[in-house]
Image (cartoon, rainbow, N blue to C red):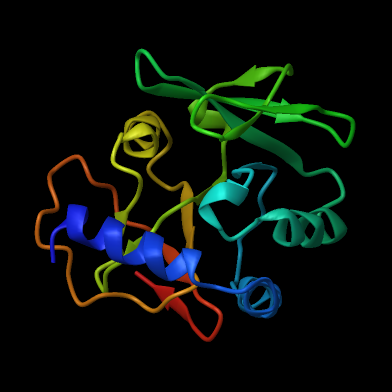
Length: 189
């Protein structure tokens, strides 16, 4: 299937999840995340879930990482919607977030870090395929950002649903994931 069709299908599937179903799936995602054999990491770039899109949150995973790596630095993306570029902003427990015009919660302030400083990135997606390619929202922010990261950055996708067989219209700018976690399985690519 093509990305456009997959976006429509998986937006509807996420929208159909009830709050209780979503809570259960979030707990199962954390269990799968805890099974990933991560190398030592110091800095993670994650995302704040868009509630309006019923996105899987990363809060529980970040809390788990903070518990196991107390000195972990956590960054969130801040997007420039005109240039379609994003940067990583270091945050603290006291950081404030504000929704941009696409309802993406972004840090209001903080220190910008270079893409090469990020050891692991949690990437939002609508669906993914069995080769590790993802369908995002279609603007390419993450693929552009990843082009500037170290080749060994750990790329993790988070999905409520199992993969499709193949995304038929992938292109040379699409960057595959290393892992994608679903409530019932962790996929390694």
